[in-house]
Amino acid sequence: METEVTARPTRSDRADLWTVIVVGVMVAVFVLVNAIVRIASIVPNTDVDVLAPFFDTVTALPLGPDGAMVDVRVDSAWLTVSDLPVIVVVSLVAAVLVELAMTLVIVASAMLLCRNLMTGNAFSRTNTRLVFTVSIALIAGTTLSNLFTTMGTNGAFATLSQGSYDGAVATGNVIPYFAAIALAAVALAFKAGERLQRDAEGLI
Image (cartoon, rainbow, N blue to C red; front, top):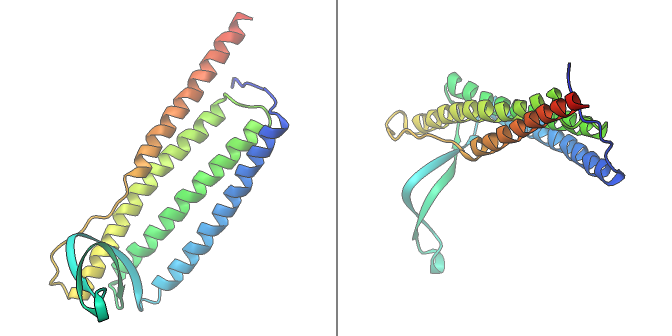
């Protein structure tokens, strides 16, 4: 039987929770529109913009007096590529879809958690599972997104250089992994709260 803490939130708490829900809806709509726009720019396979990382790369830009060339160090740049191989197009689209799915799962879980908190259900198995779901979504979504993005970026380099560029790159962001670890710790705290509540009720 699921054990719950049913402490009704204050009016201020409910207002804060509703704010989170409203912001969540706005984020969901924003990422959905962005994903549609991004996919629409990839599928035609003409002048596709691909963000590519660079390591210790120096190039010249007309930043000096009267447009004189000045050496600058770049760590990323947008590549505009056409006629990409099908597998590269699929990879770029897959990266967008994975990021979209990850964001929607996180937003939906957060909204359900807020709903439960508004009804006074704090420490429950449902809430623990919701927090774990967000953590897993971050790890799985980030890993797959990094994989597909790397495939797309290397495909863009290969297309532009006609296969002569041998500097394969790996793209990725480790911050979501740290966030996932923090959320896993929160989920364990929820689980500990369940246990303490269950033990307290057993003493009554």
